[in-house]
Every structure is written in C-alpha cells, then in structure tokens.
Length: 495
Image 1 (cartoon, one colour):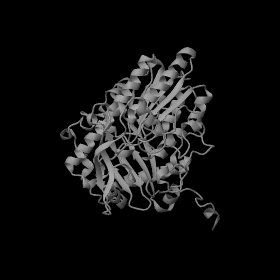
Image 2 (tube, one colour):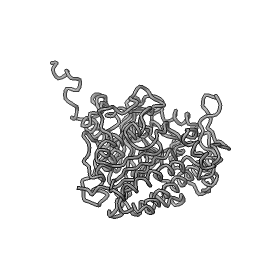
Image 3 (tube, rainbow, N blue to C red):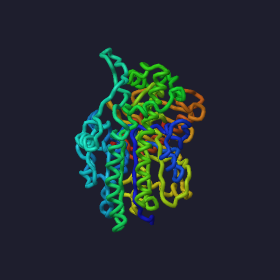
Image 4 (tube, rainbow, N blue to C red):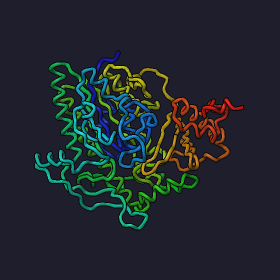
C-alpha cells in the first residue's frame, strides 16, 4: 500500500512538449519544470486522450474515455454533447474528500458549463471559460487590492479572415501590465493562499491535501508583458519542419482549418516572432511554477508532497500550417509533457505510452486509495518508482469535433500512426522515416501489411472499449477476420 502523500497538481493549457528544456529545447528557459524533471519521472510518451480542453479535462476528472463520459466538445462550441459530468460517473474529488483530504482547485476548470470545483465540495472559485478571465470580478478586485494596473493590450496581432470580413483571430499582443499583475500571478497567489492554509492543517493535525493550479496559458492569444514578449530572439527560433505541409493526400478539413486560422497570412519572420512570444509565455508560467515549488520547500512540505505537471493538449503554432488545435491528430497536439516527482522515487525518463486518464488513478494511488470503478486508466506509480511493468505498446485517442462535429480515431505505436477518418481519406505515417508526419502512406502498396495490421488492432481496441466507432469499421475497414459478431443485434439470426 502506498504511503499517502500530499499532491500539488500543476497543469497548463495547449502546451507543446518542445518548449521545455527538459524535453530538449536548447533556448527556452524553464528552470522550475526542468528542476522538477531532474528530481522526478519525465514521461516521453505522454498523450492526451483527445486534443480539446473540456473532453480531455473531463477524462482526467472521471478516469473515463471521452466517448464514455460524453463531454465530447467544449461548451462554447457545443454540437449537442453533454455539458456536465453525469451524476452517476466517478469523479476524482469524491474518494479524496471521503479520505479526509483538504481539496482545492485554482484556475482553469472548463469541465462543465455551470458546475465548477465548488459544486464538488472543493475549495476554490469557478473561473469559467476557455481563456484567461481578464474581466472576472475576482481578478479585477485583486488588481485593485494590490495596486496593479487594469488589463490592457497594445500591438495586437490578428490573422486575416478568409471570407474577407476583415481581421481574423487574435493571436498575440503586448500586455500593458507588469508580470506581477498577470492572471498567471493571480492564480499563483490564490494557490499560495490555499497552500499555506493546508500546510498548517498538515503540520498541526496531519491532514493531507490535494491542491491543483491550472493556468489558462500558454493557450493563444499570447497576451504577455514586454519582458516576456521580447525575451527570445526570433532569429534563434527554428520554424517547424512541418510548415512544408502541402495537404496532398490528406483530409481536406486540414486545409480548411489552415484557412480558418489564416496561418498562411504570416510569413516566416512573423511566425518566428509568434513562436518566440509563445516561448515567452511558457517561461512566464514556469516562473509562477517556481514560486509554488519554492513555497513547498519554505513550508516544509517538499519531502511529503508529490508534484504532478502536465497539459491538457498541445498546440500547432504554425506546424502543418495550422494554429490552435483541431481535427488533425498530429504529435504537435496529442503528445504532451508529463512530469511526476514523488519524494524518494529515483529520477528517470519513462519511455512507456501513458495518457492523461492515467493521472486519475495515479493521484488516488498517491493518496493510498484504490482506483474507482469504472476506470479506463492505470496508476503510473510503478513506472515512477522504476518497477518492471508490462507497459502499453500503443496508445489510442479519439476526437469528436470542435467548431463542428468531426469524428476521428487514432492508433499510435512506436513506429507508425494510423488515423481513421470515416468521412474522408485515412492517414498512415511512418514516424521513423517521416517524424514530421508530412507524407500519408495509407495507400502506398509497400505499407499494405502495416495498414492492415494497425487497422485490425484499432478495431479490436475500439470494440474492447465499447467505442461505437467500431461499428463503422465493421463494414468499411479491412479488419480481416476480427469482425464483431451480431453487430446489429439481429443479423446473425437471419438466414
């Protein structure tokens, strides 16, 4: 049985793996997270179950695949899916509260439309929405109490709307506030207030805690102070190799999304600056993470507290001539950073496939609690502790749409990736010879065996999960002899 731990759970939004020093970026400065990785487990094959905020966060909270919990899209772009977690679904907060934990959440929630952390008896205020709450009363009051200037932006950078209606999406801008007045600092302050209270309860009475701080960034738009906006020289920023994307042989929706985000509106120099600003945003959040990790030490909690860091999904920032995220299952948005530091566990790099859903039973395991039933994840503590375990040989992800319904499923193993697009061409990438996923080899005769193998494996896994996407594959995909029996309920009874 695991010794119960305190847990500090840090999460960012739309965060690329390659922005962190510990994942190989030679320029971006992320000392807090790099230091955390140096003392903990850095997961190199950490994936989101779906690259969209609400479904990914709901999967973490419930421990269920998106198709199972039913929150398939963000509420702001809802196409008819659930808005709130069902009352009979398991939620991470319940067993922790039952075990006597102090439980707090600060920052982005974005799991339901109306229900926030307080609905689940957690300490913390519901800050609704997908983006930084610049005009939320709590933030504006905090600015006044601390003598900070109000939110204001100059030199805003917009895309170009493809329908000639004028400017497109806001991508970046200079925030006319000092770093200590940002929403990121506000969230860190609120987290510190709870952390100090929880530290007293822990030291005085042994009451343990689970405390989350979830930032809204580095999700676009990148609205940050000058010191971070100009922190990195654009000349030191390499452009993504996948900017060579042509969309040849790929689903047309990708080209349409490129138009929607007007990615081609920016030339190479403009993209280097935007990526440099994105890196600055990452560093700004890392500085706030440093404040929280420093407080753990100052409050004599470091040796009793596990720290978990991850993101809900990645971001394109020009990769594949795209921006934000969307119906394209590339590594840029599906692979995310994942760091877990547990006192006493050896530092290590973990090469096993894991997903955001696994953090649900992992956090319960850190509290000495069993996983809830049902649960689609598995605890990562054996991997953190360096135990020999039979890890996953592949990962399966799903997508249900964002601005409109759009169904996709993905299977990714150590060399290949298959993306099943029911309404369009399917995709197959050889990540050994084509790491930037530029060449769709689904129709290539040389890959016929690989295609057939991955298709059958994806089908079997969807069938095992009960994901209804398997039913289309039953009649429309090359699944060999693996067809589900009696898939329509009566077919096998009819001669």
